[in-house]
Image (cartoon, rainbow, N blue to C red; front, top):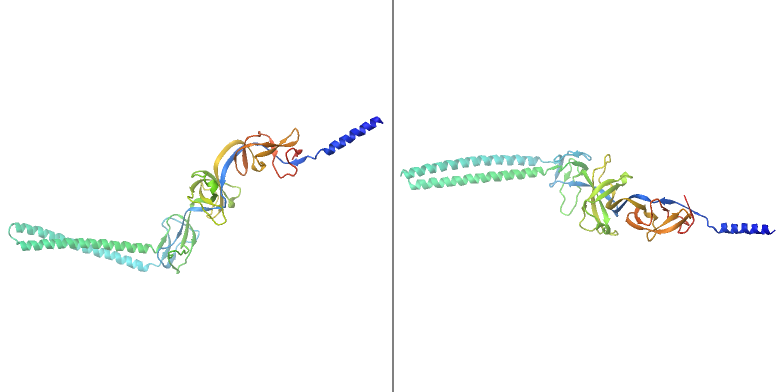
Length: 374
């Protein structure tokens, strides 16, 4: 009987002990390892792809559209004629100006030859006057005539110059009736059709361009970065470009320009516009001006350093490390280095191969809790 009582006491004690033990919590763990950690500055709002050269071309003179020589989407060469206004009157004016130049040149030729003849006659008269064969009055008359003829030659030369200026001005007016491509590119938009009238924009009033020309051989991303991070930016810093149109891909770039002023938009944080050029246009990817884009400027980079996911850090730079001997979580303070929203460099406090809690929102996962790894 005594032995039975002892056995019952032992069994009851075991039941009480097991009942007092908490159920282990099933937790996901992350194995600490080495990798790359970068300190980056990213745009605060979506940026967009822009062209290094984009011109909204318009004619300086108004008139009726005679010819439209390109269509939207056409590729053009530098100097290629895009649009032609009605210019027959200017063509006639150019012909008239050319004739005026020819007449002025003939007039100059006649006047200058007369001046040369008068000069020769004056020279011969001086010889005769030296032999007392010509009076002083006749010599004076011939000298005066030589000077008058010389002035007429100069006047005719000036008239030729004036006629050439008029011809050049007429040519300029004729050229203003033509719209040519200032560089190679693609025609993005055309406003106007043959037969329609086009007029230049009056001061202060914006009108649609006749031709919107884009040089898509040189593209960059302009995006705003918060003013707090802008102080760390420098021209030529490396950057990464990501596009919504090409998810899962990133393209190398570098800062080409930092705006010299801070933008203050209503209901928006103060930002600085940053331009990032593609190091090399992505092969096989057709980039369109206006695509939304994001940038990450690499401020610093450490290779092969101990790191943990950023979302595993508790307040005060602590992590919950798994103790395999006790099957419990322990709070460990770590010293950190570079960080971004994905990774944090661990300088001390953890070792390669340690396992830490990877999801802080796991119910019951806290320091001292008994856990079982998933």
